[in-house]
Length: 120
Image 1 (spheres, rainbow, N blue to C red):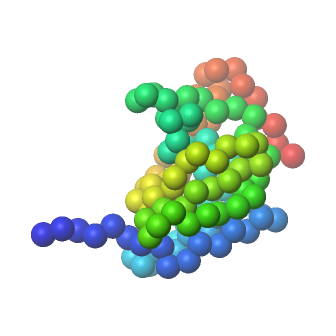
Image 2 (spheres, one colour):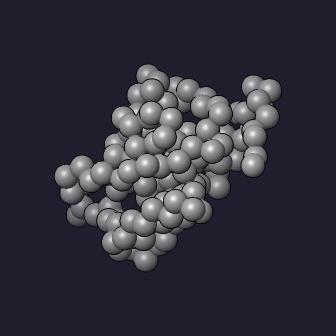
């Protein structure tokens, strides 16, 4: 028996809040900050070849466009020029479900690298 992945029922770009809201048919809803989506982009530029490449200086990044890719993903366009990450439904769901763990790991990696996040 194949278990189907949750599919988004709504994507809402909340530019002033810096959030992409995603609702899934599973009933789950996630508020994904632009910075979080940028530093966890599924692109090779961020993922490298099996190793996450630490992204810094993305605190104030904005999403300028959300473009559908078939019936399985969106391409998020960021104002820093990054536009190569395809966020499949399963990637968005995973990012939502694991947001706290991912974000804590990211902040620890920044700290270990001696990087101080700039908060506005």
